Image (cartoon, rainbow, N blue to C red; front, side):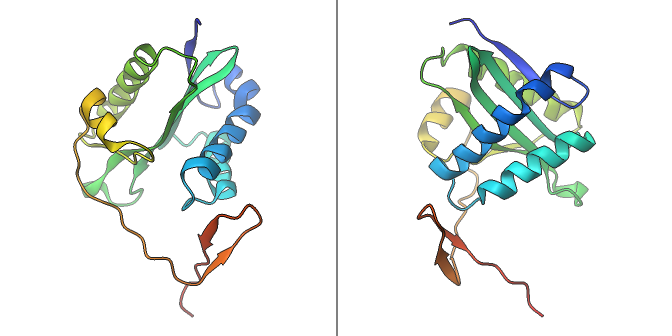
Length: 168
């Protein structure tokens, strides 16, 4: 299957056409592989940054017969220059595309963007297979993210989420 990469930004007219499908894909990724991220919040974050042209977020799509892959990355933390890095929040390709070509092309774009920001560190949250990311793309284990959920409750889709309430 032939596909091409699209850099999703509000100044790219074609990006507007793909936004509804992209938001569905972001939401579905959260439900399927990232239960600690609220799907609506992720969708709202991507939509909001896209609409205002916030360049601290980037999304790349692999387009073939529709969207066949995506990568969503953000600059983190927003307000602490000394610790800034690019965080790959989601990276997913459909099974039917060539796994050697798309990741190579899109990771090259992410690295170029990261370096263009003057940053030297690229982090990734591997939701499925950390070992595969180490072998294929040279990522190394840096830290483990651990979570302790307090005040848990069930939501309609059966995924437990944290009901965070800031202190009064």
